[in-house]
Length: 264
Image (cartoon, rainbow, N blue to C red; front, side, top):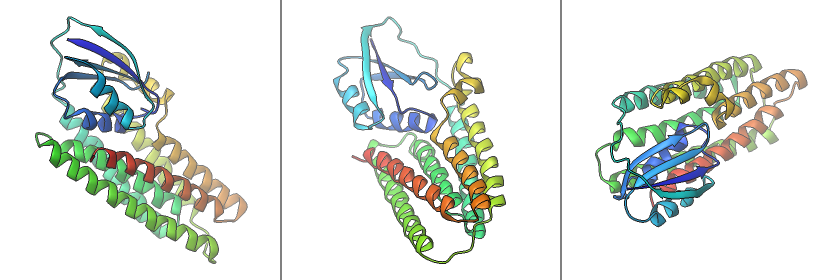
């Protein structure tokens, strides 16, 4: 048995962990994956050479780099019996906030909230693929990933078109109070998701402090929408909302391309 350690600079939250798990799923030489999200490290226990594993990690474009490979005597690994239950919890939270943010975004005319809802949907896709394809073939997982990726890109493009229409049109100001309030709750929800998933790790990684040191992209987006809401009120302009919406749509498309990589 060998132990190969990777540094993955863009592994900010458990969503990236699930992408990596799905990418490496078809490699039969892998015995176990040990993720250290706060320190952005992945330890792969495997037999044979690490070339195929390293290639797969690099293909995800998450800043993966092999640190070392060494022999190990460890052959038994503790399986997390609650992993599926935890994934269901996080999926439910993300999908619920996708609906909440999409609904309130449309009502309040906030593209920032609409875009953030798609980011929540993107995470739901990742956890959903992991859950619904459990026990299924690699081909099944790749088909689901392809469908999810293209669907996400389609929604983001529709969002871009709407941003352009509002930018050049004469639109009413979005409801800044709704933007701020909903985004605060979404920020809390993302924090809960990180906490729930960290419960599946060792005790040292289970606390919120470690997770908050490396704040996920989702939390940064939530803060961005909150700031945009404040600027909308302060400047009496819809431009801050449209700008944050555009930024988030770009991030959503980047996430979609990551998902599509799993289908190759």
